[in-house]
Length: 346
Ligand code: SF4
Image (cartoon, rainbow, N blue to C red; front, side):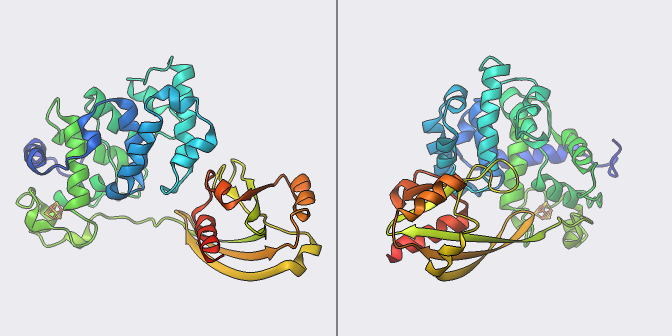
C-alpha cells in the first residue's frame, strides 16, 4: 500500500526508537521468555488491562496453567476463576477454547505459522503479529492503538484510523521502519513509547527519542493526530436482578454463551409473584462495558426459609450457594461488588 510519506527515512526513525528501547524499555517478566504460550497469555491479558494491574494475574495464571495442555484440560469454571479481577471474561473463554484447539488440531504444539496462529479462537491480527514477531522473528507489525497514535503523529499522517484499511496501512508503514531481525523488539518498543511517552493526552515530547523527527511535534499539531472519524457505537441496556437469599445462602445460575458475560454466574432475573412480599432493598448500579452502558436494578429478596429455594432451583436451573462457595465462581463485576458489600455488612 502506498503511504503519504514516501520521502521519510523510515529505517532511520525505527533504529532511533530501538536505541531508546535498549536503554529505556520496560523490564517485564514476560520479556525474558520467547515461549509462544506465555507470550500469547500475556498479550491477551494486557490487551485491556494495565501492566501493573495484570502482572500478578499473569503470574498466577501461568503458575496454574504452565503449558497448553494444562489449560486445555482445565474446567471452564477454574479458568474463569483465575481470570477473576481482569474482566472481559470472554478472553478467558477464548483462551480455553484455543488451548483445546492447539491440543486437537496442532498436536499440542503452539503453531509457528502466522495464519495458523490467527486461526486460534480469540486471536486477532494484533496478537498473531505480536507472537509471530516476538517468538518467531517474523517481520510483522503488531499494530494497536499505540502504533496508530505514534505513527500518525511522527509522520503527521491523517489516514483515518477508524477506516477498515487502517491496520494494513499503518502495518506497512511500521514494517518499513523495522530493521531486519528486530521485529519483536521493534513492536515492544512501540508499545512502550505509545503507553509511556506518546500518550493520548499530554504526550511527554521532551523525553521522546523521536521528537526531532516527529512532524506533528515540530509543526505544533499534535492534537490533530491521530485522525478518527467514526466513533465506537455505545448503546444503553437495562437489567433487572433479584438477590434471593436466606441467611448467607443465595440463588445463582450460570449464564449461557450468548450475549454479554458468557458463562459467568448471575442472580435470578425474575421472581415468582409470591416472592414479592419478601423484597427488601433496591439498588441501581451503573456499569460500562466496551459497547454498552448498563443500568442494573438490583433488588434484595430475603426469604424466610431455605425450603422456598427448592422450587425455584428445580424450575429455573438455579443452585443455592453460600458466600464462601460463591467465591469459587466468577460473577460479573457489578454482582461481585454487590456480594462483597452485602456480606461485609451482614
Ligand atoms: S514527539 Fe511527542 S507526539 Fe511525537 S512521537 Fe514523541 S511523544 Fe509522540
